[in-house]
Each structure stands twice: as C-alpha cells, then as structure tokens.
Length: 380
Length: 243
Ligand SMILES: Cc1cc2nc3c(=O)[nH]c(=O)nc-3n(C[C@H](O)[C@H](O)[C@H](O)COP(=O)(O)OP(=O)(O)OC[C@H]3O[C@@H](n4cnc5c(N)ncnc54)[C@H](O)[C@@H]3O)c2cc1C
Image 1 (cartoon, rainbow over the protein chains, first blue to last red):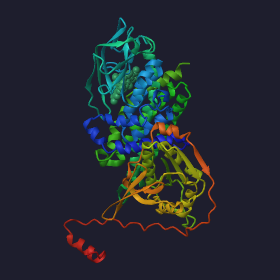
Image 2: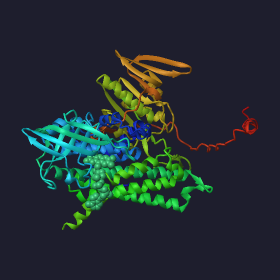
Image 3: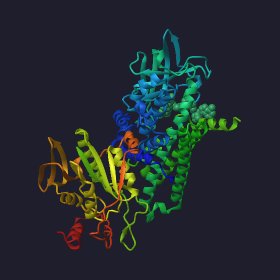
Image 4: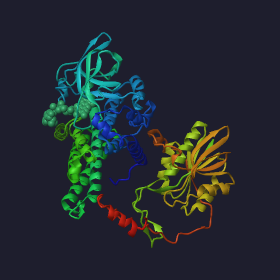
C-alpha cells in the first residue's frame, strides 16, 4: 500500500518484524508440529505493549488506535498466523469486551494485567452445537443470592486452557431472546471452571483452541459486564471490531505467501528461465497483489472509521470477508507457484496454506459476513 | 551519567546498491534507510548504562531532515532527546568536527565501530583527538563503576581490557549487547520527545568523491561430481593455481 503511513504505524511494524524474526521464526515450525502454545512469546509481546495495543495508557496499555493494531497483527501473520490469531483474540475479544463494556472498577481490575499479558485472555461465545447461530447457546447462568451459577461448556475457545481470565457469554433469559444473554468474567482458579479437550487442528496449531467447562461455577455479581441481558448485543459489537483484526490476520498471511512466491518465482528456473517469465505464473502474481491491495484498502477504511468512533458493522464484515478469501486465494496460488516444494514443510507456503483457512471461519464465516453485509444494505 | 551516541543512517542491509551521475553519487531511489546497526548497539548499551546510573542518553545525527524517522526510532528505544545537525555527512572528518561542536558535558560518547555504508570507522578516533579525551575503538564490553569506565576489545589472539575516567569516547562492536526493540510505549513517547535541529559549522571539505565502482560480480559456483576427484584436482591446480 502506498499511502503515506503514519510514523508510529511504521515503527510498530518494525518492532513487530524485529520481534517475530528473533523470537518466532526460529521455532514456529516446532510449535506447529507439536501444537505447542508458546506462552513465553506472549509474555514477550506483552512486554512490548502488543497485548494491550488499544488499551488506554491509563490502564497500562499502549493507547494506540486501529491502524497500529492492524499493522501489528498483519506483521505477525506474515511470519506466523498462529501467533497473530492469539494476539487478535486476546486484544479484540477478551480485552476488547472488558474495555468496551466493563465499569471503571472492572477495567482497573483486569485491564492492566491483560495489557501486559501478565494474564492471557479468552472469550467464549461458541458452543459445540451453536457456532454461527450463537443465540441458541445452552450454557446457562442462574442467579443464587449474590452470585451467578454457571453451567455448560464453550468450544473452540482460543486460550481455553491457558487463559488466565475468560469473558463468557451465557444464557440468563429465554432461548432465542437476543436480550437473554449476559457476559461474565471468570478468573482461572474459580471452582467449577476448567479447560477441556484441546482441538487437533489443520492450521493455526500454535494457537491453543480448546473447550472451557463450567460446572456449578459460582461467579460474583461484580463480574457481570454491563447489564443483565446485554451480552449478545455486546458480543456482536465486540465482533464488529474483532473482524478488523481477523482481516489484518488474513492480509498478513496473504502478503507472506505472496512475497515468498514472488521471490521464488524469480529464482526457480525451468526450461532455462525463471518461472516468473511464464505468463501463467506472472498473472497469478498480478492477481495476488491486486487482491491484496484491495483487501488492504478495506481494512484501512475500517480502521479509519473505527478510530473515528463510527459504525463499522458493514465495512468490517466486508474487510473480513474479502481479506480472508484473498488469503486463501493467495496461499493456494503460492503453493502452486512453489510446485512440489510448496507441498513440503521446508518452505513457508505450506504453513500459510493450512493457517489461512481459519480466516474464512473464525469470528463469523464468510457466509455469515455476507449475511451481515446484505442485511446492512437491504435494511432501508 | 550523561551519554551521547553518534548515530548514522544507512541503507537497509538488503539494498541493491547502484550509482548515478556518472558513478559519483549513490542512488537513493527506493532505498529504505535504517539506523546503522553498530550504532543501534551503541544506543542500547548507552541506555543500559544510563538507566543503571540514573543518567540520560542524547543521540546526535549529522544528516538531512529525511533521516528524522530513524532518529524517532532511536527516541522510541528510550533515548532522552536528539540533536540533528542539518548537513549532508561528507566524510568522517566533517562528521567528527560537527559533532565535536556539541559534544561537551557528556561522560561517555559512543559511536558504532563503522557505518555499514562507507565503512570509514574513523569518527571515534577523530572525536577523541578533537575533544582531547581518551578513545577506545571497537569495544565488545563497556562497564561503569565508581566513576571509572572499563572497556574490553578483541585483539589478535586475545582480549584487551582498558579503563579510564570519563569523558571518554568508544566505538561499539558486534557482541556489545542485543539491540533493543522499541516497545509501544516508547513509540508513543517518541512522538513528543525533543529533537533539536542545529545549523552546521562552516567547514571546508577535506575530501571529495571522484567516483564509485561496484565490486565485480561473484563468479558462479561450479559443482563437481564427488566421484570425479581428478577434475577437482585439475581445477585447483591448473585453473585456480592454489595447490
Ligand atoms: C481456530 C479457531 C479459534 C476459535 N476461537 C474462538 C474463540 O476464541 N471464541 C469463540 O467463541 N469461538 C471461537 N471459534 C469458533 C468460531 O467462531 C466458529 O467456528 C465459527 O463462528 C463458525 O461456527 P461453527 O464452527 O459452529 O460452524 P457452523 O455455524 O456450524 O457453520 C457450518 C457451515 O454452515 C454455514 N452456515 C451456518 N449458518 C448459515 C446461514 N444462516 N446461512 C448460510 N450459511 C450458514 C457456515 O458458513 C459454515 O460454512 C474458533 C474457531 C476456530 C476454528
């Protein structure tokens, strides 16, 4: 992208690049193979202020806006999508939910710990039987005296086992009532709260995804975020912002795959010449870079509107939908350009190819993004 | 403790170097500029020492306004303030004389061992001479205790340990420390840290570039089949004449 970037955005990019080259690239294939979630890397990101990019300085965060935030995730994802995904989930979902809907006391209590990754955050909306259709969730919270008693399970939760704190959406009203869901903060160590099965995934393998189980888990009233019954509406707003981070994650993967393919196409010779001389390969690269720049523009528009406090419901869905499909397109073409070598773990595109697919699924599938976009344009 | 770090701004290490105007000027078109890597070490070690001794670090750069992005990066690493002397750096003599004008009142002055573009490696020694203070070139360790600086230098077949009181000037070598990565707070703070721009001292150029020349391209790698030792010996003996 050739718009003049703000100096601080460029500096954030450089910091993330330097960190990723030093602390992520050397080990990422080992983590990927072993499905190891490298907690110390997140502590390192926390020390740099990257686990509280959007958190105001008064709560121990970095106090930046969405441009810096998206740039940081993109740069991480150019190297390793898993770390980018975990950073996005921690910042946008858990921390973002508390930041947007917590009261002053709650923000003072939790944000400083989250902003430096002293605590790693999780966010639980999805259940085994309710993904896109979150309103049908079964996890329930019943009021008993001054406490809420939580029962049920959440699935597919990023940091479900390693998270020190989770924002959990649970039913407090009638099934299918959009005002029947409430958001709770549950700290690790609370009796009745445990991590469950860890998923064995196609990609994003260094980002922990697992079940969270609640059995008569008692949560004090002061851990309720916002009003009773507002949880679902809150979650949808949290996801509006979160989609920008998944779009940035997608963009990073797309760029990583494209840059690797571009370089390889100039080095690999067949029939006595670099394969980039073949129009079939050059046109793939042309398609990739065009789509990448278009995705980047949508992301920039979302960041700009979000920074101005405007509604980003439609544009962030467009950015997430488009950028995630572009990342799948680019990773696929990159493997093709690498040929047999792209099919091995010796070259980076194999990992991009596996990691990118999460982007069209997590935080709302492409189909759900189209629902959001079409509802927005058809509503008047 | 007051530390001054002299910083140059150089083309990114992956830059393809080309020349213009009949090979008399370096072609800056599309080139990414970075803090000279050795200077990054000097800044980092300067910061560590200043932080341990409730001091401050000032960065000085002789160069044009377009290099201010790199100066901001130094500020984001934790440097207290910066001075830019508004002139094109012509050669080591010019740079050292400009810096010597402002380099008073510091306990420790640091440079990199050389800038990775012109590789002069002379600013440290020149500054020592101009300021009439000790200089320690190419150091891998700098420590400070009880008013005394101590330095370690790698020398042929061993190491040399030096110590002296400040003010002293030293140049940073590779193993001095791990370069510091700026954190978000540093990046935010760098926006408002003081960056003073000073006019250069009038000097007559001591040198002038007549022309540049790129190194001859490396000849390709020749692969010889392991079973064909005879050919290898033939090449080593008759073509390369090394055995
Ligand atoms: C790695 C990973 C990390 C995750 N992290 C978290 C997390 O931290 N917290 C969290 O709460 N969740 C998390 N999730 C869950 C994720 O948000 C869901 O997987 C996602 O919302 C899709 O839900 P589902 O998997 O149940 O798919 P389903 O909803 O069952 O969808 C299956 C298919 O049907 C389509 N579909 C469904 N409904 C419609 C419709 N109305 N119209 C058209 N098509 C439709 C979908 O697009 C999809 O193609 C994570 C998932 C993954 C894979």
